[in-house]
Length: 176
Ligand SMILES: [Zn+2]
Ligand SMILES: [Zn+2]
Image (tube, rainbow, N blue to C red; front, side):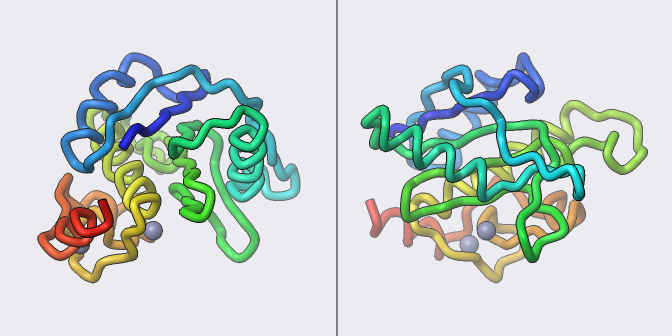
């Protein structure tokens, strides 16, 4: 399945190609990298965060207007939220095949720690694979090391492996 990656200009540069390779190694997708053609909207000044639902709305509109049918993953650097959630690493909308992930809370800088490019990359791959997994109709998994475990904290995400457990792997196979 082809997967469009909309890489926003604010997201870390230079890692796009290896990001696409890692995603393809984890899930049955063929990533196609594009510059993000959309403006990042949804800023909520009262929270100093960006509403992930608004970003997904704009992807839905883009899809309707452009006639694109492939699933889209948007990568941004804005800190994401939505009503009812203090923050989000990412969000998927399987009904329309769109997802967004943010590097904001995946970077050590957010926690006052020294930067670690490799750790940021690893977390980004895992969080992105999680949201794309939802686009492939995967639900949350109870296995704490599986990509589809719901990571609520950075520790969760760090514990997860770049790995899909046998149950989730079987499920992806049956869907495709
Ligand atoms: Zn999830
Ligand atoms: Zn699993």
